[in-house]
Image (cartoon, rainbow, N blue to C red; front, top):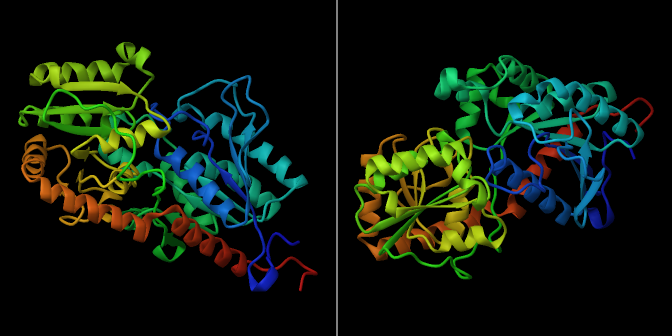
Amino acid sequence: MSPFRTPAGPRGRAARLAIALVSEHASPLATLGGADAGGQNVHVAALAGALADRGHQVTVYTRRDAADLPVATRLRAGVEVHHVPAGPPEQLPKDELLPHMPEFGSYLTAVWQADAPDLVHSHFWMSGLASLKATRELRLPLVHTYHALGTVKRRHQGHADTSPPVRIGCERELGLHCDRVVATCRDEVHELALMGIPPDRVDVVPCGVDPDRFTPTGPTAAPGPHPHRLLQLGRLVPRKGAAVSIRALSRLPGAELLVAGGPPPDRLDTDPEVRRLRRVAEEAGVADRVRFTGGLSGPDVAAALRSADVVLCPADYEPFGIVPLEAMACGRPVVASAVGGQLDTVSDPLTGRLVPPGDPEVLAATVAALLADPALRAACGAAGRKRVLTHYGWANVAAATEAVYRSVLAARPAPAGVV
């Protein structure tokens, strides 16, 4: 079968595709909550599974970051994770991976020369660079999802931005030379246009959530000693705004804050971000009402969400943000900063509230109004669950993503001799 044309299958259905997802630093097998393990890992794993549910064969290519990893691991039926030898077989910060991308790309070229996928979908800019090298040489179609943009990171972090200086230029080249960009929210389309990537090269397909895993009913984390619980869930990096939540807590007597994410519990005391946040809590006078759980996995994430009265997502910027969807799927109201993908997912006032980033006073006042009104919280939670079921299930996301793949394949010229 030609990699550029996919004939109709039985009963008029399109035939199965062999799809390569490239995610150089974000393995679908990783434990979540670390500095470089978060929403992208969830997205790639869930998208791979949902595409497999649609009958496709999916291989995820991620960097081998431990010496004992096998070449390939079966994630589930229809999905295999392939560990690419590029750089030392150890964990490295993602901002240090660029020198290893030529090796990553050469490996992909060799593998795909022997067994080409129908289409390649790269995730994050360095995956895109490695994939662009291979797909150009082999004339394979390439779809790209950024997950985060260097221009936005530079704007918000300034000199604290540790991205390689070439990132923005590489992201622009990638957007202009791949077959299609899949953006995860409308705000990203605007940011890409500012970079010189025309909107007609971009389709918007949101991230998703598993509504069977994240449900309003099920096991719930043990309650604390306080009348109300707030939850901040996700990677423990400064831009996620946990310090804003902690400062807001000083204006919310009777509430505790559960901070879920980061390293395993036995390494919390040595983690620099946890230590910084503990100092913030001490200065705010709320150290006795802030509890750090460490990284959560599996059902513990949903259990923590169900235990919260309100879920806080006060990031400085958020390329998409999966946590609001997980909270909404669990029937919990969300208070999120009005940035990035959260502008799309959180419907204010239906499913929660949008607030300015970096303002603990406004965050506290908004949360206080929700805590004072149990009926309002319940209504927001029910509306959030309905919104997830309507728009953000992974089955919907996979169908929309496949539609992009099909349009890319249809638009490419057939190789000589193929009719």
